[in-house]
View 1: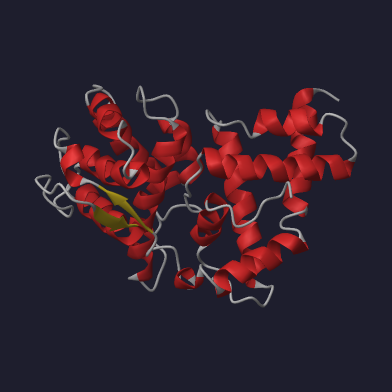
View 2: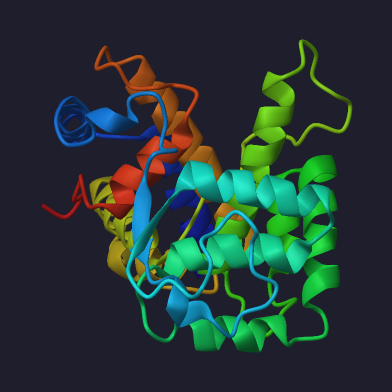
Length: 277
């Protein structure tokens, strides 16, 4: 079997072996304890940032505090989604990116410098606008494919945040209508994929591969679930797995919100379950 064949076999097995009982128990305890605030969704998940540190960034989202503020502020997923929705409706695509980028960086000091360089790229507005249209017409994986490598400095860990918050806009659009529109995004919805989540997936894949008897399970898992640069195929595998695992949790009788796969993404990011333990 070649390396890609092994990777495909491991992906197939991951689709069958979603969350082991230990993971379901750990996630259930989290939802009943420190994660109880997310029982209806991850929208309240907030991070701290310092508005004044972003003083050189334009355009600045109108929904965010003025950058004269030197103290800390908090911004939630729901607030970013609302800001993204407003910016997209005005076709202010760079502004939509800023809101998600600030949320993703939080208080990280080098974030403003990196974002300024990204916004200076001549391709950024067209690439983001195209991604928005593709997300709505063809779905998350196609939008990911279009953004991959399209803007210098904007990697998957951050453009999946942009896609996630942009897709929340479409979810809201659908919830306000009794009928799905013809241009509604294809399932599964966009979710964030970053290094921390990828490492959880890598550890889980390595364990599943070992159970399959793959002698190279660690190497294959490290290859397909690297720290960055994931292909659109890998993103599709991730979305399929996390949406299916959300369905598994919803059926487990632990009160898991079955319509909100972002709660599982948040739990994996927070290290609620460690597949290697």
